Each structure stands twice: as structure tokens, then as C-alpha cells.
Amino acid sequence: MFHRKGAALLAASALFACAGLVRAAEPQAPKAPDFGLSLVDKPVYLDDTAPADTSLMGLANRTGVDKTLGSYGLTIGGYVELGATYNTRDVRFNAGRVFDFENEDPTLHQLVLFIDKSVDTKSKTVNFGGHVEMMWGADARLIHANGVFDHYGIGDGPNNQFDPTQFYVDMFVPVGNGLTVRAGKFVTLFGQEVINPTGNILYSHSYLFGFAIPFTHTGVYGTYSVNDNFSVALGVSRGWEQGFEDNNHDSIDVFGQVAWTLDAKSNTKLVINGIGGPEQAGDSGDYRYVLDVIFTTTIGDQLTVAVNGDWGYENHAGNDGGAAQWYGVAGYLTYILKKDFVNLNVRGEWFDDADGARGLGTLGSVYEVTVGLDFTPFASDKNWAKLHLRPEVRWDYSAGPFFAGGTKHDQLTAAMDVVFGF
Figure: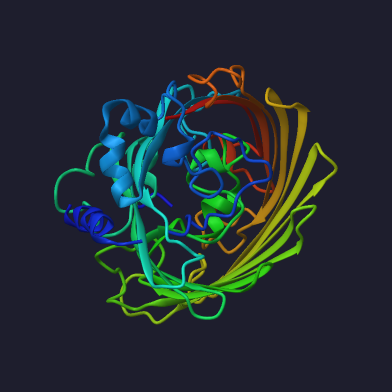
């Protein structure tokens, strides 16, 4: 999972040239913290920015830059995440983690800036949008796409690196109920958890996020709204974490999604994602398949529940050279203890990589339970409303000795991250 200039510039140019973006299709965790900047749910529009707003758009308002941005229909923003983890085992690394794997090492995970233009899905004419997103920090080295920044000496640092996480162009075509086509590099449709910490309820990530599904794709896909409650998507990409270069000689994979709002009042949704194609380096022709299912619902005014399940299969990917499978399920609970101040978040998970295809050896099953809080201590302050403090405690258990350098069956960690949107 530890994958490693011109395209970002081209994409930025395309944004300014376009005349008319459907928000990034990252599935959101239940009651994900409102940082005031999520591209999915909370875009910062020009006419919504108050004079005291400290976001990038607020600064743009006060300097007059917003007039130029507004003439192109552009939104700018970003966020920063810092965090640290303490492991009760005397170890250097937290086994099984994705971004928070360094023990007792305060980390600048992500400093992200984006520029965004949405398509008008109510328009009767073809219109364009797009998105360019740059990350600096320790997480950038872990989501790297093949061929992006590889030959400029920019992504070779040991810790903090740059990563153009997304750069794509959207086109809305007013056929039927509306077709949106996206082309470029974009985050995956798969999974309940996402790269962007503002879309997650906890600091640490699940095994499903880190080992079962891809991070990003470079390709093209279309999304069609059958009606207000049902949509379908279908596309092709160069593969898992592949960018301007392809590890298997330009072979493509095919992916798709079905999204169904079962009940709008309780925000009950079912999302099914699927992907298949050759992912191993070279011309092996061995295919990898993943099925991803996400169900979310709200119960009353305070409780949100989500369940995410994954199943994967790949030819000749096991430790013994044979076919391999991996599968697991994660459940999420969010309970509002005090509105606009603190939420209680819980995740429980089981994941199995018995064939060793996803890097966990042949341990059999791993389990984890995480309990955390999400504080917004200055929710009423215009300058600090987007500050979130998220402490958590997590316990992991493995059927085989996986933790503490392969000598222990479990580990206990305490951690906290701080996220601030601007």
C-alpha cells in the first residue's frame, strides 16, 4: 500500500477554459465532521462568505480576487491535518495502519489546497467544470500514483512530499435526467472511508480502507441519474494507483457503481461498487476483482449507522502463488452527545487476508475496535468554527502474531488528530 508537473498545470488551465463539477464522489462516513469545506456536502460559495471568514474564499473577498474567481465560477479552499499516535507496545511502527503508522511521532499528515468549479446539473446545455487538488505532507507518499511526479525529483523525499491527489475535468450533458462525465485523476468511488480526513469520523483508518480497495484512479467514467433516488456509474481506468505510467502496459480495468437512496427522510442509502481488471506488474493477465457495499442510515436525531463490506479475488496473488481472496466488514456508529460541540464515534471491524495478497501475511483474521470523540470547541466562532479535535483509543487483535514486530497478537493505541479548514 506504500505506493509512490505538467498534468496539474494542464488541468488547472482546463478549469479556467471551461464554461460551466459534480462534487468528488467519495462516499462519506456517517455524520462526518462538518469542516465547512467538504467538496461533497459543503462547498463554500462566493455569496455565502462572510466578511470575517478566514477561509481562502474569505481572504479572496477581502482582496478582490473573488471577482476574478467569480467570473470563472471557481471556488478555492483547503485544510490541514496534524496527528500523533501512542502505542503501548514498545515499537517504532503501528502494524496494520495506513497513515498513522509511526509511533510517538507527531506528523503533518496533509496540507491540501484545491480549486474547484462545479457543473450545473440543472442546465439545459452542455457545461464544464473540474477540480485540481494538491497535497503536501506525510500522507502524500502513501497514495502516490505511478508516473506522477516520478521524474522531477519532487516526490523522492523521505517523509513530507507533494501529491496532485486529483486533477480532472467534468462535463455535464443534458440527456434524460443528466449525464456527468469525469476524466483525469480522481479518488476512488469505493469504501466508507476516504483520503480526505474531513470525510471520516475517526483519525485512524480501517483495514478495509488500507488493504481492500484502491486509493485513486486515472481514467474516465460517467454518472447517470435515473431519478432523484437512483444513479449508476460506469468507467475505465489505468488501474489501482496508476497515473501517467501503467505497471501492466496500458491494460485497463472496468469499474462501476449503483447508488440507491432507499429513504430520503432517514437518509438511508445503499451503494454497491465493483471493479475488475489486471493489476499486477507486467503482462501476467491475472485479474483482480473487488465488490464493495456500503449501507448508511440515521436513527432519530442523534444516531447514524453505517456498514461497509468488501470482498476481493485475484489470480496468482497468494503467498503460495495460487489464487487469493480477502474480505471483511466494518460497522460505524456516530452519536451526537452535544450538538455543535462533541460527537461519540465508534468503529468495529473484521478483515481476513489469509492468502497474503494484501500484505498482511497469512495471519488469518484481524479485528479492531476504535472509540473516539470529535470536538468542535469553537463552533460559534467564525474564525475557529472549522477546528476539530479528535482523540481516540483503538485495540487491534490478530489470529496470528502480527503486532510488535510479529511477536504479539494485539496492540493498544491512543491517538489524536487536529483538522482545520480554511
